[in-house]
Image (cartoon, rainbow, N blue to C red):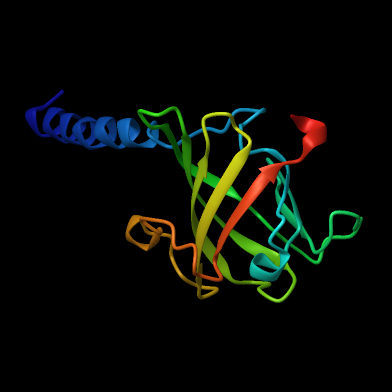
Length: 159
């Protein structure tokens, strides 16, 4: 092999190896993620949603706990997950509404499950349909006064 070929192959490998390492940072959700399940809200006036069912396929929102048909739904991708020093589980998620008033719009969301895994606090930011998901777009904190903030409780049948 001549020197030019060796240089080309070596250069290509030096570029590929770091990219492969970066791809491993992508979070791979578990089959039984803590955020998966049925969640309810007692503050219907604030969120407009009394029940959310979250799974690997996404989230479905129901106006009332007794409803069997969701009023909207969304895909939901877990971008990252970590546990803080108090034992709370945090997620950064994103997705696209597949039905309802927000259909076609994307969102980014900051989620926190308390240490007992029974309270879910969420803050989302709606994005234009063609927006690219970027780390800078994620909410950095919760704003309980915002209409894009919600607190939900694990449905008692799952506790």
